[in-house]
Image (cartoon, rainbow, N blue to C red):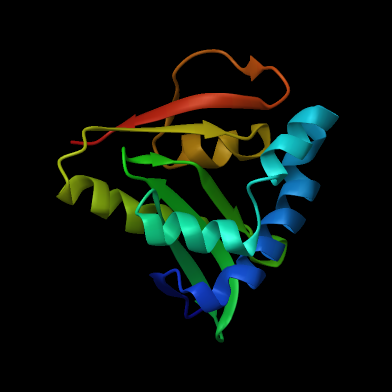
Length: 153
């Protein structure tokens, strides 16, 4: 499968938002409270993606297959991964791993030694498979997640 990873373009904002909302609702939302779902989704909209990208607060990379967006990953300016979503038809096909590899190379280039994420409960096994370790117990508030980290050598 020929997947292209590229930097997010503002023209992709609507499709990226839809992909994230659909994936979030199916795979992540069940472990969040109603308040947590509403709060998390309040940041997912085309204008927000464009603004965060322009401001330098976040960088996003998309995965494309036949010019269709099938995945998205984001990184913050302090080198965290706040989101990673892949269309459900492309789960277990290496898309998420390709996106992670892309941002890990950026982190390495910038001298980052530890990558931290707050994984959804759904994605914990994926992250463990690619070298991330649980850094403490599951956090259960309005949003439920598993803090994880990976030490880069």
